[in-house]
Each structure stands twice: as structure tokens, then as C-alpha cells.
Amino acid sequence: MAAKSNSSDYLVLGARGQLAQAFLQRLGKRAIGVERAQCDLAEGDAIARVLRHFRPRVVLNCAAFNNVDLAETQHRQALLANATGPAALAEAAGALGIRLVHFSTDYVFGADGLRRPRTEEEPPAPMNFYGYSKLLGEEAVLRSAAKALVVRVAHLYGGTSRSPGRANLVERFVQQARAGNPIRVTRGQMLNPTSVQDVVAACLVLLDRGEEGLFHLTGEGCCSAEEFARAVLEMAGIEGEIQVVARDARPAPRAAMTVLENRRWAEMGFAALPPWRESLERYISGL
Image 1: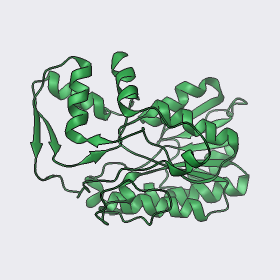
Image 2 (image 1 turned 135 degrees about the horizontal axis):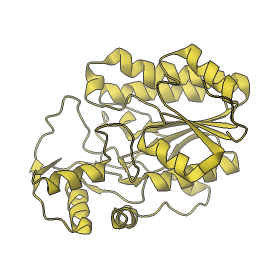
Image 3 (image 1 turned 60 degrees about the horizontal axis):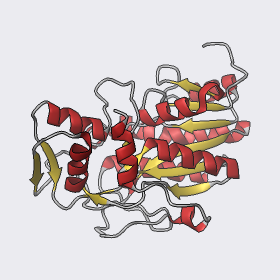
Image 4 (image 1 turned 120 degrees about the vertical axis):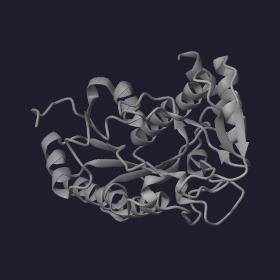
């Protein structure tokens, strides 16, 4: 393991992902990124060893098993990365007095069939195994002795993943259209398109305030999957085919609506996160 850096105020786990990359770019020399090869959440001993080595002020857990469809069959891998790993991380962080930010997902909802945004106070009801594993992880972190912030996000885009084949949602739509392939979306599915840059900025505000507990942080407003795809193509100046299908044929079931409401953020008097169209246009203009 590399020598300890004196500038590691923040340790970012899952460093290859788009959210982690956005944190690393924003924090610069104040942060150190750690990839799975250096700290696998499936290995409890590795987690404690890495935290003792770097001794950061804050650890940002951006690592996860986030292939929703593979989680339907690879239960053990999903649970290790999304549930038991975060539990071990929270235990180690609490023992060392390190603040923890853990990221969860809108997919902890869905089985209740509700057609309205969910607040932080509402009981989760995951519809697929990925959502179930993430729910177990966030509950373990919130029960721990760690000074923890659990942030649920949804439909992230706007970052650059270093993992092969892990283009963000907007990039996938653009790539498909430019290749002449149709973009398939499910009729009636509602989204919370959210820029990773907006999530990073809001998280740092909460950290500066010393906040703990559960927060939703998503782009302001929601839209259908079809509306989002059309907005991406229009803003990118690309002509492409959008196929609207009646049913989602992917292995993991998806709910029609898991839109999140940032109620705790609003109750603290913060301005709403930027509207999804505004953040989308800003991102696409820089592509």
C-alpha cells in the first residue's frame, strides 16, 4: 500500500465510478481515491486496514454492486458489496472517529406501487434484489455508531466512469443514437435525472453543516423516460429513434415510479437542487 498522505481529508471508495470521480475532481489534493483492488467492501479486514492507514477525516463510500439485473442472480456478491461491506465500513469508521457518507438509491422503493415522490420518512419497499441489498446496507450504516450521512440518489449522469463499459445514462443515449440504434424506454416510467456535480455540491454542504442521517438528493423535478431521452437528443443536436415499449423485459423488475422528494434538504432552508433540464443542458454543452 502506498505511503500515507497528509492531505487525505477525504477518502473516496469505489474510485473508478462516475460519482467518485466527480468527488475526486472537486476535492483535488484533499482527497485520495481507492479502487476495489485496494479496498474490496467484501473483505471486512481490508476495510479497517485501509481506514487505519489513511486516517481520513471523511470517507465517501461510492462503491457498490450496481448492476441491477445481475443482482437478481448474484445475490452473494450484491449482499457483500451493498450490505455487509457497508456495515463493516460503518463499524470501522465509528471505531476510528471517521465521518462516513454512504450512497443509496431510489430503488429501495417501488413494490408499494405508489405514483408520487417518496420522502425520507416513508417506509422502503424494494422491488428487486439490488434495491433490497442497498436497503440492508443503508439500514446497517444508520444503526451504526458512525457519524454517518446516508444519501439516496437516482438516475445519475454527468460524470466520467473509469470502468470499462460503464458510460452514464446520457452518454449511453448519445452513443446509441449516433450508432443508429434505437433508444428503448418503458412507457410510463418516471425518472429523477440527477447530475453527479449537483450531488457532490450538496453533499459537501451537508458535511460542512455536520449533518447526519438520511437525505434524498436528486435533481429538481421529474420526467418520463421518453421525455428524458428526447431532451438528451434535442440538446445534443442528434436525430435518433426512440422506441417506447409497454413492458420492461430486463431481468430485474423496475417500478414505474421511484421518484424521490428532497424533503429534509428543503426543510433546512436550502435552495432546491438545479432543475433536471438545466443541469442536463449544462452537461451536454460540455460534451
